[in-house]
Every structure is written in structure tokens, then in C-alpha cells.
Length: 281
Image (cartoon, rainbow, N blue to C red; front, side):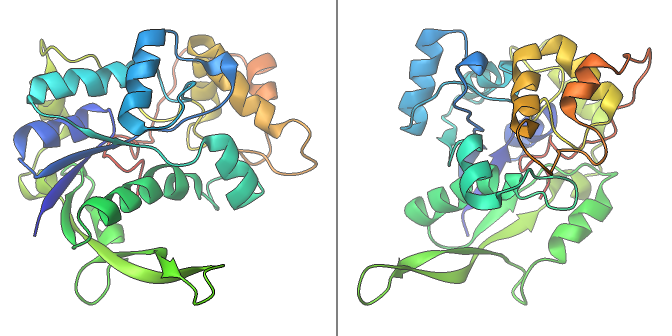
């Protein structure tokens, strides 16, 4: 069975890639179409387009993550497979019809897991051992993932397997594709060891990983992100505008967070699910 390591751009999944060899490294890029979120370096934008074979305007993740993946390729001494599915705007329009939230968080499925699955289907097609960066204190998350596996211990994905007889419709089925593995839990690796490992290494990391406006973040953290990434946070606020119902977070709109909420002197970002490679499975 071939092995794959899912790289998110955070220190934890990068640690797995550095210390637990696998046959393939895989990174899923979240893209947006809004020119206000345009990645500032034109040459790097073209380089990214060459990797994903799709247009790249920008991302609502921290731009540093692009440099992280490029740095990791140099540090690892091997290429990382870049994949990207639909843009975030396309996902909102065609797949959900409403904004994802804590109860209906379909964004990860279409922005991260689906493009990784179709890369696997095209390039491998046999079940793989998928190394996921859950740390030693995240056993419950690993158990939640294992609970979703089939009787063979494999996660399944509802994917396209061909066309109907008349060729007009796609044929779908549940396809077993990965066996989850948690090397950091097996080796009792905690966050402090990971932070220590990356000190003085030639890899640039973002201050915080995953989409800057992720609805899992608490409002004070999101206010902080407005100060750090105004253009990207404006993108999240704009998605709520013109909607009669539906917000990223229950009971509060992002525009209000930016204009009304005072930034606290202390906030705790408790959401760690963005650093393992899957933006939380």
C-alpha cells in the first residue's frame, strides 16, 4: 500500500512530512476569484498556476502559506503535489446554496478533500495509507475519523466512477480510498516538540493556518484577523451581504465584528483542526 502525507501549510503536517517518509506529499489550495484578494507576487501567481493547472487569483488563507509549501519543497528536497478544486465562490454557489457553518461545514469537503480524492483517483486509484497530523493530545479526533471507516478500515468518498449508458449523466459510488494513520499519536508527539523542531529551519510559516475568516474562530480572534488581513476578511463579510438568511456564525455578521466589536487584549484560538493537513476531517 502506497503512503500519502497531507500537507496543510502548518507546522504539524509539515513535521509529519519531514519525519515520516511517504510516497507522495499532497497540498490542497483554497482559491478565490476576488481581485481584492489577489496574491501580490505576479511571478509566484504564475508558478502556482503552473502547479495546479488552473487560474490562480488569490486565496483566503494567509498568503504566507504559498511560500511555506515552496519552502517545504526545498527543505524536503522533493516536490509536493499541488491540487485545487473549485473556487470558494463556485462551491458556495453550486454546492451549498448557503454559507457553511459549524453545523453544516461542507467547505472542507469540496475545497480540500474532493480535489485530493480526484488526484488520488487519477494517479493511484488503489487505497493508500494517509498520514494525518493529529498530535498526541488529539486522540478523540483520531477516533472520530476511524469511526467513519468501513469494515476494512478505509475511508470512503462518493465519487464519479463513469457515465450512464447514454453518456449524459455521471455515475456515482462510494469508493474506498484511504486508510488513516496518525504517526504523531503513535509516537506521543506534542505541539512543543513540533514548535522546537522548526526553530531556525529555512521554512516560512504563517502565524495562523487555514482560512483567515474560518467560522470556527471566536469573534475576538476574527476581529484580530480583520486587522491582519482586511481584504480577505472583507471577502467573508461580502459573502453575507444580500442574503436574507444565513451567516458564517450564528447570531453575528462579519461586518459587525469588524465595525462594532472591540478587539480584546487577550483571545485564545482554540481551534487546532486546520494544522493537520485536512482542515479537520
